[in-house]
Length: 296
Ligand SMILES: [Zn+2]
Image 1: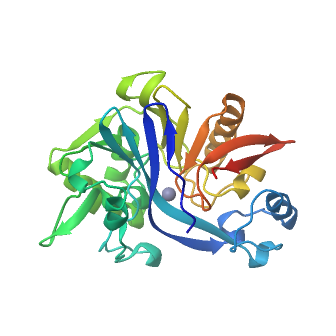
Image 2 (image 1 turned 45 degrees about the vertical axis):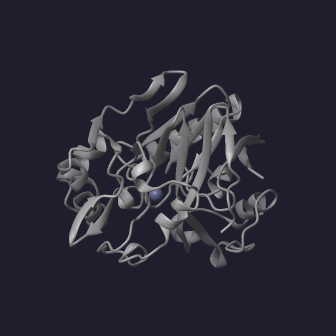
Image 3 (image 1 turned 180 degrees about the horizontal axis):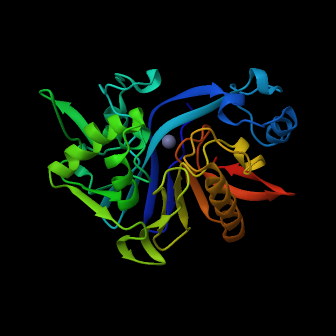
């Protein structure tokens, strides 16, 4: 895994904490992708999961959190899959990863974290909200407020058909609520300071019913933590294609394209939840589509 270089934007410091990663068949993840799209991607991005052909390429996803330090506060954005969780999908089932050691390597202990923000309530974004303690799921970050968007919170409280995300809701969201550490908020909530300078949620519905992005601008470069609005660099080449795990693929595609346009126009630093490589960077226009200048 290629490390992300620490970023300092004004009063805001950003690091990445890794959990792991996995590759899916490219043709399954992004139906309609073609060899010509991969050729276009190869002009600015290479990865050992990619070949010249869709049939032999993988759609590789990192799983990581971002840790923000700002004005003495420590904020974790998206908390990966977590350890020891019973999941009906093999890639997330009973994981035992050194996530907390990776966090500690950055000088952050669980009790230091002031806030956990989940861009949405899918299983790979809420897992480390809790950890197993004597057979009970307890909040991993005992001094944190956990910020959950109301739309996803209500959606996953009633939808029984999505087994994998429902499992995560039960063991990684509800125990936090029971412990009194959750704030169920509207999806346009300012969590620190004021709009335009601070850290705030913004609705970006489509990938899940209540998916959000997190904006951060603290006296320097504007950064956006985009959660699952975009999963892989190849979607910069083809933002129009439907991603297999988007709940409302057409809406998600519109949201993705509009975020990429805004990031390119306003020179926003983008930090997607699953990009491989150094993960963060700057969106640039590339004729009719986009490309990404990764942090170096
Ligand atoms: Zn995700």
